[in-house]
Structures are given as structure tokens and as C-alpha cells.
Length: 158
Length: 298
Image (cartoon, each protein chain N blue to C red):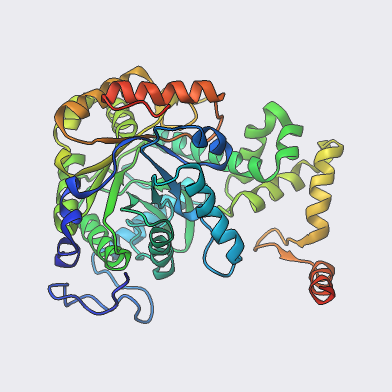
């Protein structure tokens, strides 16, 4: 169904969709800067943009952290249940100011911060992940060498 | 503009979109309940939750749509994108557009939907659907991104206005006028989220019925319904569109108003967490059907 040929009547001044690099929107330059400032503000990494209601931005920031905590809980069920009612406030505190990295990494950051107060189940959940994956706290977790070797051996053994 | 408008009869005419009845957002947690709905009109699946083809394994790829088809044989499946970023000033990523198109092909979908929102900026993910200033500048960015998307999709695209807790200070359009202009420019359809409309009107101190009057209701492809609540820890007292609470009566009343004013024969429930027992979920779907004068899915 995909038709890569230019359509009659399609605006001729736009660059081809699959061309090198991202499209340059002239209209976007100012908007791009405003969007970046807003994202920084909501992630707790920059001041509130001028003209926006600080109380409403704060409410949005909290809602965003609750949502991240919810996604992290789906990846880390034992961790979330170990912290119980304290899960959302604690996770929110840990995640505020950190880039949005998805439930696995967000939860990992929370697990490491909460290590001292975790019970057996949550500690095992963390230990299993730490054994299988190497996570430096800043970039996507990667399978550890022994995990990669084990899966390569399994493939060969088939 | 012409590219999308010339796509086919369905692109400009909601009557051509074969969605009808009461539907639901399919989620793994409620798959069993959805499976037991004999009168389900359609379902929606989050596009980003569908595995990419074919690197993640052909088996998984086949099982996913197979499972969906199995629980709702012959029922339309609408891919619903949440991270494309049609409002991103940096443009839409071709691979994200390609994934949305692949989802539509995989499910044989009659249409695809996404949001009027931006989701990332300067390479940083917001983790949220964020509002755009309702300005000509933002319209130009949206128009360009929507055109790049519809050029690849092969099926009509429906755009959903989001719920947001704040507005930009320099809005040049009302929400209804902004949307009408965007739909006119791009030949797209409206995914009317009645819960979002209610939340925004309430949080702005507006009358939701008056807001509804300004919406391009002749372009509605289908309707979203969801629950929300005032959060106990939020000092602003704002209403949050959580998708984790029951649908309030006010939102059901507004749905009835939508149905009085336009065709909109397809209405669905979005639930994203704190899933209620099956009986409660089924009752909520029946309440939607009653408000919309549609056959109950149960």
C-alpha cells in the first residue's frame, strides 16, 4: 500500500520523506526551542517557561512521575509491592530530574535507591536483573558477557 | 494537502469508515474480558505495544494479531499510536511512521489514529502527550508531519485532541477552530475523546457543551471514553484524565450530546490500569452503549 512516488498535487517545496536527515521546518525553529524548554521544565531539568501557570506545570510534573512510577511497577512488580503505599512517592522522588528511560530502567534506578529497605522477593528481582544485564545507570541495559555466551551456547547446542 | 485529500473516499468522509458499535482498547490485562464480548464493535491496540516486524521473531508477530483476531473474529482492529509525535517540531521519524503503517497492514485495519500533541524535543522524551500552542506556527508543523504520515499509511488517519492541564499563553485559535483548520488542511478525520474534552473544559472553567459546538463533528471517525478523577495529592484540584477510574456521569451525558449532534456510531472505552473486576468493566461498556444508543457489546 505504500507508494513512494511523489503524488500529483503534493506540495513541491517539501524535501523527500526518506531524504537525508530530518525535515527542516522553518516554522519549527521557534517552536522547537519552546518545546525543548517545556520538556526540560517538566523533567525537572529546567525553569518553568515564561507565561505558563506554575501550579498547573507542577500538577503535570507530578502526574508524569505517577505515570512513570506505574510503568516501572509493571516491570518491577516485587519492588513495587515491597514499597507498598510508599511506592509512588518514593519512585517519584528518585525519578524527578532523570530522563524518561522506560519502565525497566526507571524501575532499576528506583530499586538501586531502595536497596537497603527491600525484602527477599524484591532483592531477588533486582539480583536476577543485575546478573543477566549490565546497566550503567545512564544507557540501555546490555546482556552481560556470560548471558551472551550462555545464549550462544544454547543456540549451538540445538 | 492534496495528497491526503485525494487518497480515497474514506479519507474525507467519516461515513466511509466502517467502524460502528461499542469497542474497547485491547490490553493484555483485560484480554479475557474482551474475548467474552460477543457484541464487540471494534477494538484498538496501542501501536507501540505491537512488536516490530520481523526482528523480534516471526512467531511472536503472528501470535499477537492472531490472538487479537481470535478473541474478536472479524472485528476491526485500529492501531493507536502514542509516541509518533505529530506535533514534534523536529519532525516525525520515518521508522515510526513505517511501524504505524505496518500495524495497519498486519491487522487489515480500516484506519489508524494518533494525537494532536508533541512527545519529545531536542532528543528528550517527555514521557507524556504534551499540548501545542494553538498558533499558525504549530499548525504548520502539524500539517507537515501529518502529511508525511498519511503519505505512507495507506489507510485514513484520525487525529485525537489530548487532555492537558495547562495551555500556552499565546493561543490564536480556540481548540475547535484549530482542529477544524488542521483537518481541512490534511484531509484527516477526528478521533473525538469526550473524556479529554470534558477534562479540558472543566479545568479551563468552560461549558463542555459549548466547546462541543465548535468541534468539527461531521468528521468524527470514532469516539474515546475514559474515566478520571481529582487527585487527592494535587493542590490545584484539577481533574485528571487517568483512564484508571470509572467514567463519570458528566462524561456519559456529554457522549449522549455528541450522539444527538452527529453520527459518531463508534464509541470505545479506554482503560489503562487499576482494572476493575470483569463484571464492572462489562457494566461500564453497557453504560456507554446506553448513553450512545448503540447495541450493548455484552
